[in-house]
Length: 190
Image (tube, rainbow, N blue to C red; front, side):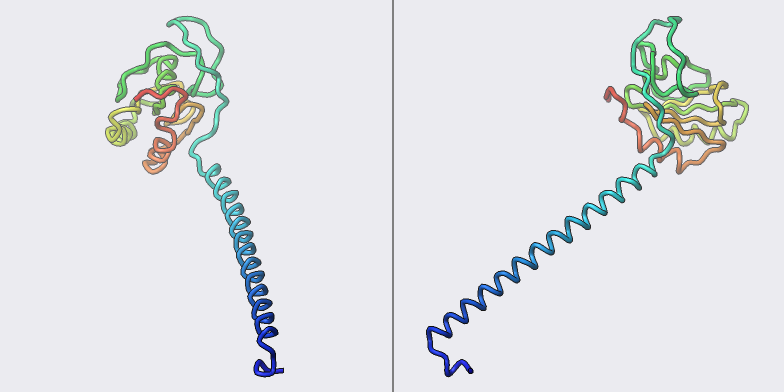
């Protein structure tokens, strides 16, 4: 039957049915689109989170707390070398470059404030020390460079709860560590 042979009422009824079918189809398309976006977004977030976790520089070190102690006071042994948390002095060191070793207990306070402590094992390696000084000069605050003969590696980078050990200067890796953990300590001090 063509439209010309349908009554006006039948034509209106078929037009309404077609409109209802179009509305249902539109709803289905909208809900399918939302579903695809939700599933795709969830999949992307899970993948991104896993990738971000894998890309965090250094290793995670268990937090040993942040109790203040007096110089010379006994405390539990640190769980990393150099330490990244734990009992420490109430006074932080000034940011910058040092040619002499500072007490671990003092520098942990700097880490608590979101600082980065870069230490090197052998002060006689002048090329290594000068390369580190060159990098550190770009950070007037929140970074300390010191010698530390007790290190296990040539270079150690410590942030609160994170440790990166390097056998040689790797500027890209050093700057990535600083970027990842600067101002991320448990106590923010500008």
